[in-house]
Length: 113
Length: 115
Image 1 (tube, chains in turn brown, yellow):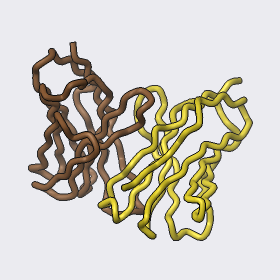
Image 2 (cartoon, helix red, strand yellow):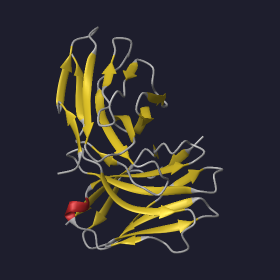
Image 3 (cartoon, helix red, strand yellow):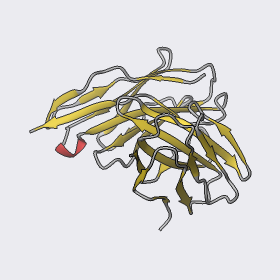
């Protein structure tokens, strides 16, 4: 089955620790995205990548880092510099065209304890 | 910069009634795409419908239709014959070339369908 997979579904982190969220797709999409969702805030773009070994900051990139070493994979690291990391994180992928929708993973709910 | 605005408060709608969800957008790009997604309580994002900026007719997809008013930069979603399973958050989104084809979202509309 083609799709996009995020893991883990739930993640707990102690303050001051870095944590990496996984996102893998087998749709052969060039573009991949990371969004953060907080209640009442909608989806805010953290980082996106349109080609391997290249990525751009979104609207709220501070405290996050990404890599795109393979077309299929776009992991997101939440660093200790992120002041309020508790949120729902969604990964998406798409073809790079204005008329194509993005496909989403199931999301990772990160809680800092 | 892209901007998507969804300002309606949470809505209650009677089962079998129609509901309209408002979305306005802002872009200077003549070529863009507008999307609506549904997010049930499980958190998954479900693509519903697409409207292209050059499309002459309003998009329809089953019980979903899009009321596209280009001059007003408005792309309202209409859900006809609401069902209990339509209870969810609904997000309007846009991508355009000027925005590097990134997908930008509004803050969403909460819909609760009551029997």
